[in-house]
Amino acid sequence: MPRAKRYYMEGLIWHITHRCHQKKFSLKFLRDRRCWIQWLYEACKRYGLSVLNYCVTCNHIHLLVYDKGCGEIPRSMQLIAGCTGQAYNKRKEKEGAFWDDRYHATAVDTENHLLRCCSYIDFNMIRAGVVTHPDEWPACGYREIINGKERYKIIDRDMLSKLMIKNTPEKLGEIYKAHTDELITAEYVGKREPEWTESIAVGSDEFIDSIKSKITHIRTAWKNRTHTMSDGTSILCDKSETYNDKYTYSVDFGGEMGTLRAKNSRYKCISR
Figure 1 (cartoon, rainbow, N blue to C red):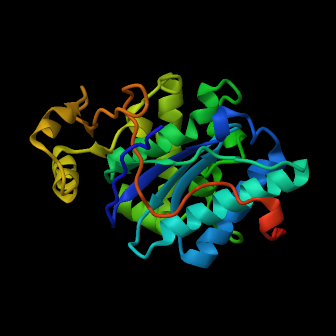
Figure 2 (figure 1 turned 180 degrees about the horizontal axis):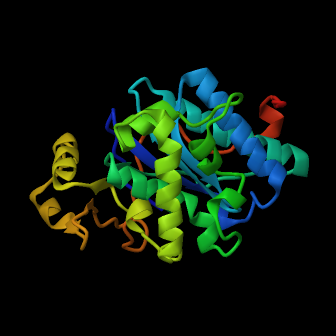
């Protein structure tokens, strides 16, 4: 099957989703979710990855990152995906793919759009009926966004505060918690928002226009691929012929996301 189109632009916020191979529940055990988070922490240390939020579910992950333009995202994705799959295969004495071949990335605008995307990530396990509040699911960034961390920091709270509320990190937790509680009270949590996982970009009209200008091979037909929602949010989408005409996109951060096989690789255990 031909692969989906990919786009790459530096200096943006990216919402990355990556599914387990054939949508299997390969992350259903706590030890595997912790393994993914440990390697995410290692990527932050090793490559300077700026993580704004994340969530590890039982069969896919969400990762919200700010691209500094230093190639940290492709290297981080290769490290995290490869080492997590390798650890799983080693323990299960298996070989083969742990992840789908490619991950998907959506460019996200700042401020309110970023806040909405963060909430979408936080509410994944609520929509699945597993928990009733994001604070109850430890394999996500919610607790660290609210309270911060002294050791093993993953969330770049300074950058998140700057991009989201243009304020000091000290006020981030208070504002973020209030927003989350308001959405839960409003029964927003059950709403599915495919624009965060099935589009090229989500944001203001100006933001969408800037994305279009950076894709050099854009054609006139793309003018009809911008949709405006009732709240004024614009979405840039394109019709892909590779996935039964679904709106499916990925960003080419370089390299392949295939699992490293245990017999060809070394396994490093990180203890916390």
